[in-house]
Length: 418
Ligand code: AMP
Ligand code: MG
Image (cartoon, rainbow, N blue to C red; front, side, top):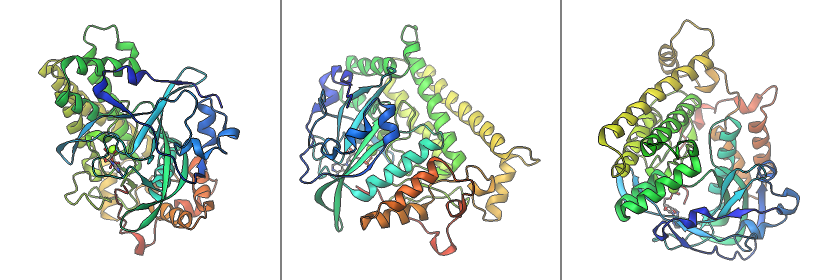
């Protein structure tokens, strides 16, 4: 199976994690397995796709030392202590070419950070995360990935009874802006420095030996966030819950809860049922990126100067603007309209965002995702597979997949899906 797990995160001071085993699932059953990703990780897909017990947490892969990670976060602007309430990190898989990826189970039972939650996840939100994260990957947008979804064979109680499931999430790391918020509130300066050094080692090793490495660290995170959020804007992706605990410092899109793609262009679009004020509306995402970075900068203040911190936030804004302008020019090609004029016209004429360029041809449109999930709820995964195939390699004639929803299906709402 070629597991090659290391555990560098557990070498951090003990306030950063707790050892925590996943729960045993009564009847694990594989729903979907990502063969391509398994191969990329150096794992043997043929063996593993028949081992749902591994991906439910029932049986640990060799060398696993599961932990739950501690973090806090500014949720809709307010500081809260959080942590992996329903996730365990099995370890860091080292690929044959030496890359390092977190392998995390999401929905595998309670942890010391569960608060009032049951630690479980339901099938449809996990399958939704699988579909959208893999679509983001196909679109060339940095993202955590999905290796598998398994049914646990156990009911999960929400407003109604749902099928319990576990998602295996793969990420360059799960270090969040919220991990820095956590250490800033509850740790010592040594703890903060340990986390910053670890993050630099893991994601920006080229700055390790520089004199001003903590300033450069903030600068690099700013650049990655500016690049990421510009990419979101360019395909109409709305994350939905850009709390600081859902912002990875490696610059990957993480935590696919109430996210969705915009059909008709409207900068005020919000899908999340809980975002009543529109804090995380499409048009606000770039500024929220700056707000979140400011929370990271604050956490780093014991290590860097105030002016230096402010300069990096300004740098984020410049990088974002550059990335967005360049991306829009590329998408528009030769035209007399400026990007701003083009968008004004889309708004005025109520036009579909992606089809108006018309690239990319296939995005995971809400009505298609819903069709896939409705079928999956009845045990039919063929619609999900067809959608994933179209997202991975858009057909010559994208046909139904590029069609916007009919007028009656435009009022899409998403839920956090816990
Ligand atoms: P999320 O909305 O998925 O970003 O989760 C926010 C916080 O709530 C994180 O600390 C999660 O671990 C925690 N959480 C979400 N769902 C559950 C659950 N069912 N049980 C325990 N903790 C949860
Ligand atoms: Mg989260």
